[in-house]
Image (cartoon, rainbow, N blue to C red):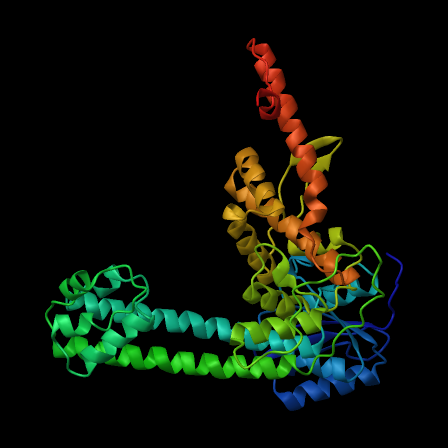
Length: 444
């Protein structure tokens, strides 16, 4: 038997309609009990754990069923250990709910379980809103596809002529069609001046077979699309209201050689866009402006806040932070031999956001853009995206931990070393071919 490190530990197996709880055998005559998932029964479960003298609880992260019980136990003062289901399913033969909760209780009592990272409740509230907003955007995009399908059935090629049917020009033309306008020349005059397609091309694309049934589906799809964007706007307002409740962090004393911040935006003006207001709020909460990092847009910074929060102190180092994101190498080595090389399969929206940011560095003129292009030519696109996302994660961790603004000049030394290596390779290759490289300054 392993030594018991937590004698006041319990294990809980979460289900959709029933919850099984196991406590140490000496704490109750019936050390395994089942409870329904109604709220009143969850409070009864918490009272029973108190009677048994339980202080810490381990449960699996099963869907979203664990959230109500987690919050109730956390309010009652229990130390709740939310564990990954893959970490406790390695022993075969335990397939019942009773044996599962007993197995969780044993592993937790001997200290073999590691709690998953979960930010504070205030951050979790913002995260729920952000994930709901993401679902609303996806459903709004579905109705755009319905609009395009209706136009295809009427042989109106408008969405093949302009890039965005949900833009200013596209919606204006669709509204005019639904209002009864059928003249292609009149509809084409609604074209915005920034549209690349000419009025003649747009008018030609608007000659079709206007059927009542397709106009009906187009009208409903447009109404549903605007309804969803109304809900998205309300969701954005709720998110900004939640962000205003967060306090600004205390910045450390500035150093003498620190580069001053020349792009400060302290207070929003009347002309500030909603994206700019959100950027200001995130800058105030994080203590730095993450959008100064190449590839990090306001939406990505918002996702990082919703998934991690403003406090990175729970991660001991940048390596631990990158490992939690699944962006660092996780090599399998046995007997001095590398059996497998790669990164762990981790499903987190924060890592996905950083990969999107890394992919956008392809055309960046910054040092990070040069790093991504070098990695792409050396490793290929997928591994280059992972490597650049790993570097972005380390940069973000360092900036938030030290409360320092991003400075691209810090990469100048690495850029110089890379150029020197390239020059040495070119000189060696030229010498092998019987040539000699001469700098342009000497030629002039």
